[in-house]
Every structure is written in structure tokens, then in C-alpha cells.
Image 1 (cartoon, one colour):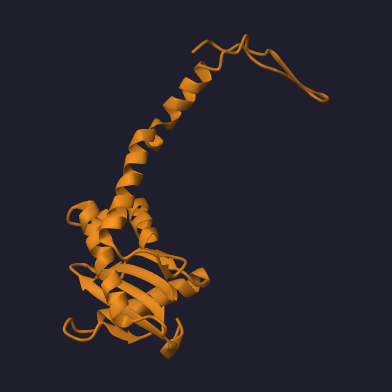
Image 2 (cartoon, helix red, strand yellow):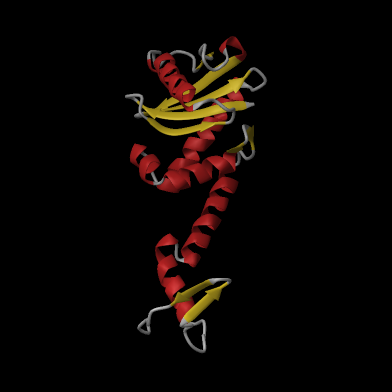
Length: 192
């Protein structure tokens, strides 16, 4: 089972953090620092698997990572997961990001965090792998994008709310509101 997915840059700044096992926030920060320290000091031509740090479970857990350009993609898994399977999963995740963002970079992870989390949820949920077919993942992302565009996104919400109020067909605006012993006088409002 996947216990955590961490993405951080070459300087140790977290760009995506997803824990599938509860850790207090200060413990999460320590895990991120320890994981970065373990992974970043390794040479690029050595194996991409190592035992988990002392904070995240020791020898029962493994850190499986890939270093792409300025980003480290690290999956912390228990001993039941296949190292090569997780490496392949990291590759699928990165290729999906690359396809969705057309040459993904660190800034895409920063400015499109919601979309990155959505893609990750299509691949892994609750620490279990859901989908490894990149075409299926991108199809679901495209469906989500079309749905967001058809709804006009969040920026169109105020305009839709005003439009809905205008179309309510109230016979007249109430002047007094009585709720039990409370009387509220409504001031005169100008029409829209």
C-alpha cells in the first residue's frame, strides 16, 4: 500500500504532499525533510529504491523515487508493493502530467495544484492504485475540463447568482420580516 506521495524540488520545497496514513503536521514536516535528505544526497546513477527513514516506518517501508529535471517524485510504500510497479506508476503519473500540461514543469504544479491533485486521484486513491492506463486517465481529465468549461468555472458564479436572483419573479420585495418575537425592517432597495 502507498503510504505517502511527495513531490519536491531540488531545494527541498514541497510541491505536492499526499499522506495516506495519518501523521501529525509536525511529523509530516520531519518526514518531508528526512525524505529529501535521503533522496537528494544519492547519485543519479544508483538504484531508485531505498529503505524508508526512521520516521516513516524504518525497514518495513521503502522510498521509491524518480528525479526529473528539478523535481523529485517520491512514493513511500510498504513491503507489499512491487518496486518496479511503483517506478512504472511514477512514470505513468509524470507522463500524464506532461500530456495534460504540454511539457510539465514545476510552475504547473504550483499554479495548477487542483488539476494535479485531480490527476493524482485518478491514479491513486486511499493509498491504492486505481488506474495505470494513461489514455484512460487523460480521458477523465478531459471530461473534467469540459465540465468545468460548460459550467463557466468559479469565476462565472457571481454572475449566475445575480442572474438567478433577477429571474426569481418575486411579486414584491418584503418590507418587514417577522420571525417569532423579532421584527426586521428591510430598507428600500433599488431594482437591479
